[in-house]
Image (cartoon, rainbow, N blue to C red):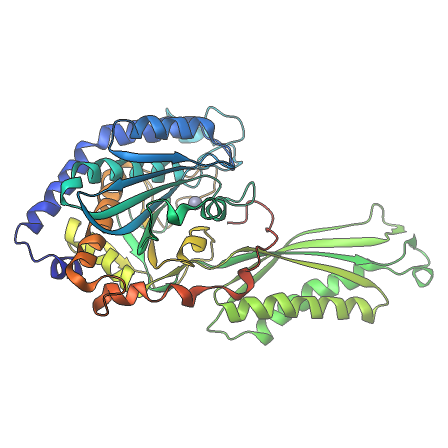
Length: 457
Ligand SMILES: [Zn+2]
């Protein structure tokens, strides 16, 4: 096991158990914080009350704390007793514009109309606070620094929070660039409670938007030959896009294109001057993303031209794919097994078609993004409502294990680097992890793209 190889101390197993047990002692505090956050959710980049609660929860710990300028982020640095590299741990903190279903009967349900922690980011925030407390208690054993990244606006309500934190110097906050980054995301369904899941390579889709307007010439519905009707041509483009998906892309590099909205016209006997549609596009490789961006425009513009119309095609780059580093996934999986025993880590066969702006962090430094099952025991993970549903419920019994995982992943990564297998040391899994950051740049991701519409993740 990687963490044990990197740390030959025979007391290490005992140490792992003490970390797990100490995390469980934090359960009441973490559940209390999570429920406060859940009851008072906030949207987007401005999360002032959430930020205040995080700052209060970190108060008294030996951390260097900074807040964002353009967003309510919190960045905290824990410096170990000995020098060493930096590892980053991330939690997102924002909620969604969803009205919580009161049938779930949660005593801590959202008090804020139309806003809900429907993606479980309240749990992420509490778990990262827990990790900070666990690691602060073990500061004497740490060789290196840990950066705690509390991020607003993962959902892209105001354009995305991770990129903004990067722009505000996230990766320089400890004085050196992190060698690795880890993040957890809870799942309200699909995974049984307490099961961690991840995979090397692509973990989530890239999520882009497609905004299309066909322009023709309005007229009377009885005399289409005197007008240029955009509606049939637009409908042709909608169906041609599905043919494009099946004919131009490798079946083993799947893509999804869903036209979710069509707008045009006011009345049956009036030909409108224009009509439009909006689509979401999910891809899992830079190749497919580039073909989608270039190919959709060619297809749509030519269909419009064939009918004497013009089309404006606006392909809006959203979040790129989250790409995990294989060595960091191995470290994360070994951390789960070391802490909780066998059977708690699942190697996911496929990426998820959701999107995640941790992608921007993992484009720059190697790391691992894991899911953690948080389906309540009285629900079936196969049928429970998805994240983002008004009926989504996350069991906060998973908080101590999530906190222990984050803390131990950071500690194990620092120990690995200290054992000489770290980034740049030239050998071992850690070295491999440290050399791959540059390979993940997403060609379509620079310069800073126009953002896809909100609620895109
Ligand atoms: Zn989420």
